Amino acid sequence: MHSTLPFYRAPLGLLTDLYQLTMAYGYWRAGHVDREAVFHLYFRKLPFQGGYALAAGLASAIEYLESLRFTDDDVAYLGTLQGNDGAALFSAEFLNYLSGLRFTLSVDAVPEGTVVFGQEPLVRVQGPLIQCQLVETALLTFLNFQTLIATKSARICEAAQGDAVLEFGLRRAQGADGALSASRAAYIGGASATSNVLAGRLFGIPVRGTHAHAWVMSFGDEREAFRAYAEAMPNNCIFLVDTYDTLEGVRRAAEVGDWLKARGHKLAGIRLDSGDLAYLSIEARKILDAAGHPEAVIVASNDLDERLVASLKQQGATIAVWGLGTKLVTAYDQPALGGVYKLSAIREPGGAWQHRVKISEQAIKTSTPGVHQVRRYRRGSEFVADMIFDASAESPPGRTMIDPFDLTRRKTFGDELQHEDLLVPVFRDGARVYAMPSLDETRARARAQLASLHPSIRRLEFPHLYPVGLESELHALRTRLVLEARGHAVEPEGA
Image 1 (cartoon, helix red, strand yellow):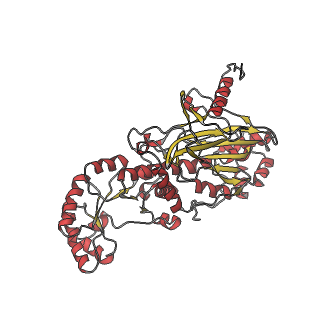
Image 2 (cartoon, one colour):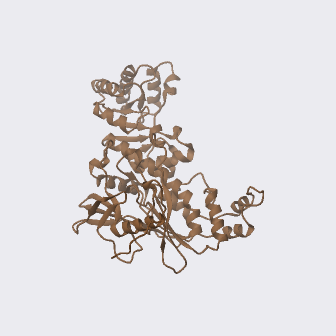
Image 3 (cartoon, helix red, strand yellow):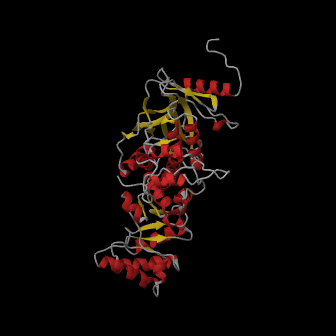
């Protein structure tokens, strides 16, 4: 498996917020070292006002968890931290505990490339409370960003309607590590290649690229620049034609295309990077076809996003390849997914689970208790609904689900529907039990998953709402715990 964390030497014990360590210290001081907990990682709202999200980032999380520990240098650094009184923040005994800590968590997760929705867990973490707490921040940073970029990429590919989409965002990404994560996630989401050569080497993603405006400007004129490039790389000729006059640039590219053809090569295409891309692409296509280069593709870039790609398609643009940079790798117009990590159950060693719920003035922020699993129902190859149920319940899940934010919205599933449970075992007691798919297999899964969504859910504007709800018994448990937390009396069942 290629490393997904190439800039960092594992282990990454300090890839966490300080408050995770202060809570861990508090648990240790309180004697809660052996207390077991369940946490779920999920997001509340779908990104980009869309109808779905595409899970990504699990491979990075797995690599992080497999090697996780606190090194001697980590512990020495923590020993230098001070409280507001100038005294050591952590005791030497606790730091010694951290240095010997080996992670024994059990983790279940939705495989990368799976379509997912708000409120349903992408990851379930179970094990010692301290360990669950210490991994929160890192899991969120891996899953949040890559899920966001994979979703953006899938939306752009949907808009491109089968045309090739290239990821060109390295120079505009949020740092080198962000760029690599974005290249990987964009490929999962459907991009066919990247300009990021390091991502190509590390992840096996195809790389694409020819020349920039500087190449043209370094020569006396455009024709000379194109000819020199063709002589140097006759098998990689997509000419950037908008340095001076776009349509004149297309004509000069076609002339050099004739020179290439005479020598047994061909003009691969031209790239438009400014101006009215619909008009220019239509006119460029006429010029190329008339000059005998119908196989030459038109590539477009210039701050594109899914909505602009869709608009250009509607305008009849003859663009065959789309280069997406800034607005893909920065998830432009929604820079964060907003994933959260919430405690939902706790127990003493050998004891029964005690359910936990967080309530809020905002209904969407009220959490759900239990040990969650997501059951996806489908009719043939089409996904029809997702039901979240409590896997720790003594009785098997029912077939009725309720919208947690509108109890009048209910759905009962008939026996004719097939189903699968989305969270699969990844770690058991600290040992990985999950066979990691290749990146190409993950990309193929994403394509198949998206094809199983109704087109109304995939559309860019005002998508249809995919049904997600709580299994009826879990909904009843959540309601009861919320009422109790708010100080309301709860009638016993059957009263």
